[in-house]
Length: 150
Image (cartoon, rainbow, N blue to C red; front, side, top):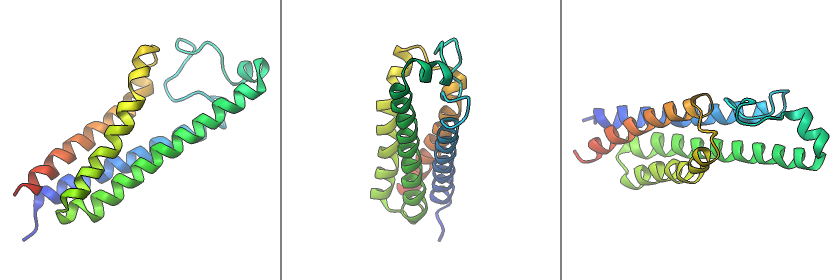
């Protein structure tokens, strides 16, 4: 007999994981455009852009660019881990897969989010898509957990 909660919960977790990958791609590609800075970051948060940073210090520009690419890679990797664990483990009722699928983004968000608030860059334009994906993920994780307990 199929466990509907596991199926729906793992599907929502997978959709959130795919959303993390999509956000990472957006983050990655903005690095190579005139936008340069992350989604939702404007002159209100950072008063210089690509040209000004490059003019001030080409090596600083390269450093920031490499961080953008590296962070996008880690966001995408986390999304991929969530997708794989949700689809091939959680959906099949494996509690260990649920634990790792939950732990990976929780760790990433616990490290990444606090300084957004400290530095005043926690705008809805900047974090809104991640908040949405996280909300979908949390709902899916709870539904899947209820399915695991049946």
